[in-house]
Amino acid sequence: MREHYCFLKDVSKTDYKDEDEFKYEKRKLSYFIDDLKRFNIKTVLIQEYSEITEILQSIKRVYNGRTVYLSGAAAEYNPDGKDAYEKFISKLSGRLIYEGYKIVSGYGLGVGSAVISGALSEIYYNQKKSLTDQLILRPFPQGDDAKEMWETYRQDMISYSGISIFLLGNKKESGTIVPSNGMRSEYEISKEQGNFLIPIGRTGYISKELWNELLEERQDDHTFDIYRHDIESLGDDTKTLDEVIEIVIELIKKVK
Image (cartoon, rainbow, N blue to C red):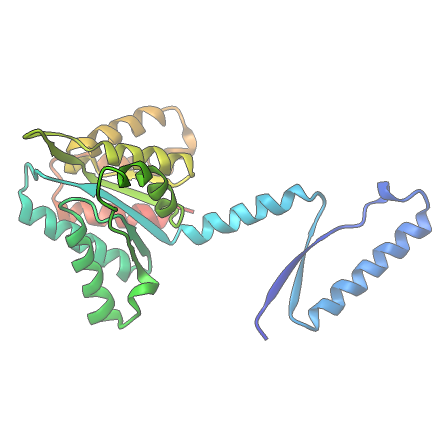
């Protein structure tokens, strides 16, 4: 039988005035727990019901930690050029799948196709797995009315993940290249939902801004020290894009 779990509140002395009654209820609970084992149900004893929420949130963090949200948008690809960045995004996506991570993406402008090609190549040609098990891809609904739903849409997509990676981040507006406000929104949502944030500053644009902000925000946070060197390296403009991929993979392996 498949293994199952149940929450049970432990018996507390403070609930009983009589010592014998307490011991009786304690034995009764013990027998009940043993009985559940016959059905392959393991008991998680708690002292307070509020612990259930904490435990489930912890399980969700661990489960979502194997899913990566890729946030990116580009109408311009300086300094490496469009071909180089598309190959980089494709390689990164394939490598994430190879390492056993799932990918969630919103099909960002100029980025989504590279995510698809890299992920599909690894899924179909190397791992022979199901697409739905490894990749969640959701194109944004279009039209002026649809834009009102984008924030909720982003929150839903990001909720599947535990790690958010940000790369590039620009769009063309009235003929001018400007930072991607959609990526800024996805960064804030990821932070609010407790995702581990990985802005790849090496790719420039808003990702560089987010990289600077993250390091400044965590400069006095010693719990961040285990990740600090890797994050700093992701903003090093002398790194090749292939080196950046290796840094990202090593970094997410440290995330618990």
